Image 1 (tube, rainbow, N blue to C red):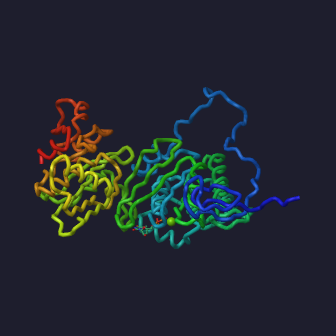
Image 2 (tube, rainbow, N blue to C red):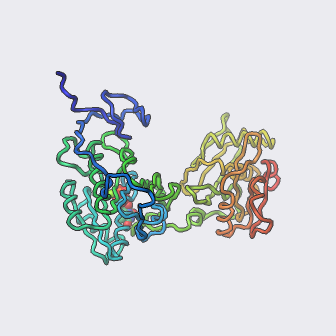
Image 3 (cartoon, rainbow, N blue to C red):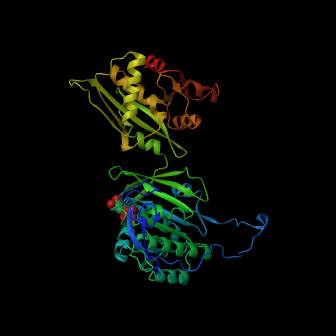
Length: 451
Ligand code: TYD
Ligand code: MG
């Protein structure tokens, strides 16, 4: 009789299981992510329902009122959909060093200072290291508990013993269960550990935050493996060089997934940026040509950003084009549209486009602003600094409406702009009496005439 196979191949990105090795994962399309690992025999079947296993009437299920807890941060609360839901399992993913531990420690400080019982479990740092980080971010008046441990059975005992309201597991890749014989950080370990934490969260009504490092290689299981198991998935992202960080809800069983929160890494921890537009526009040059304020939508929030273009005559056979932050092909396309529709000889010019603040944008609603910046630089005419521009540009130079026009105009009003140039088609959304001057344009010719 053939012996039962005790190993299988797993994708390190998404956890896809296969009997044989494959170069590309059929599920997530990543290359070279398969590793051979022991297969775990599933322990007993588990259910997250601790009350009954019989069908009940929907109308007979009651929801308690007070089941959300504030984190003490407006931005974090918004991303979570209005606070931490009791008994939920939340995954916080992100590149190493982006600030996940810092964010969660700061959250613990806020919660424990309110007299709540919090347990911070670290499998990566020593008590001393955590204390050092804690002293950077401020005073802890509450009695937060720390545990440096990797063995999940010990952690489970501690949780059952001190019954905290909030638990942080930093990070899931450093945890292991003894009865599973694959290595720490492997897919089986990470999955099984999450499963145990899920049972604890639901069974004891404790909110558990799991930290998961995003990994480049398939050696250590990345947080994507867990996305389907948890209630909420937050990703913390940002450029290592730029100081701001964006916390994004990718999945949320208790709220919208379009929410983002913006933070800045300072020497004393993360600070919320309640008004990101103001932050992004800080230090903008006044009275220079080739700079324009545009608006793009991040999640559900309009963000104002500065777009800069520099167009100069080229001494090279093939002109140079670079684009930082905006899509390179899109910039080339818009330049071709400008050349063709406006008869401007910019084909032989060098062009450099930059979006200030190191932001990357892939949103056609900034097209019109890009066009304005390019024309402004080419003609050396400045665009008034109190003007904001948005709209999509098509191949025949027409300006198309974009979503959420009202929110974009509202954001411009909030930041004290006095003129908005927008697609003519969006004008009908507004009353005659807006506190801001709205100029509708139908094509880029009308925009060029304004400049
Ligand atoms: P950390 O929270 O350890 O990242 P993660 O848990 O996601 O791996 O963040 C570490 C980085 O943040 C590190 O490079 C130092 C920096 N940092 C500050 O700039 N200021 C601070 O107050 C703290 C605590 C960290
Ligand atoms: Mg960390």
